[in-house]
Length: 85
Image (cartoon, rainbow, N blue to C red; front, top):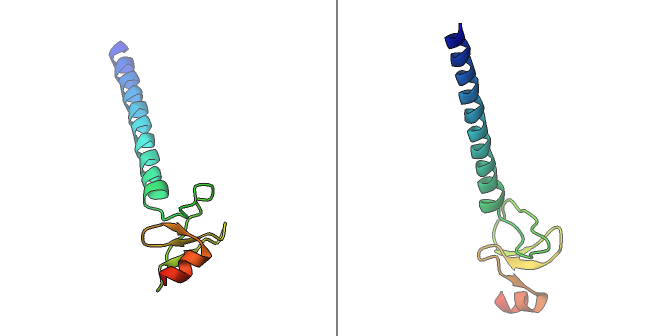
């Protein structure tokens, strides 16, 4: 009887460790998807995500209205944009 209780306890402890490990994996996966692979406005105070764009790499952030290059993510002002094009 004690052996059955010990085996059940061990099984529960193993399951709990597995669940904690799986939670860490899910948090890491979410971090990679949300932070590393998501393109964002390069202005530090903003960070608005953007999905995709067609054509010209000169982008305007929908949230903060700053201009930046969608290829290198360098911020630039209106006069810089005109000279770059």
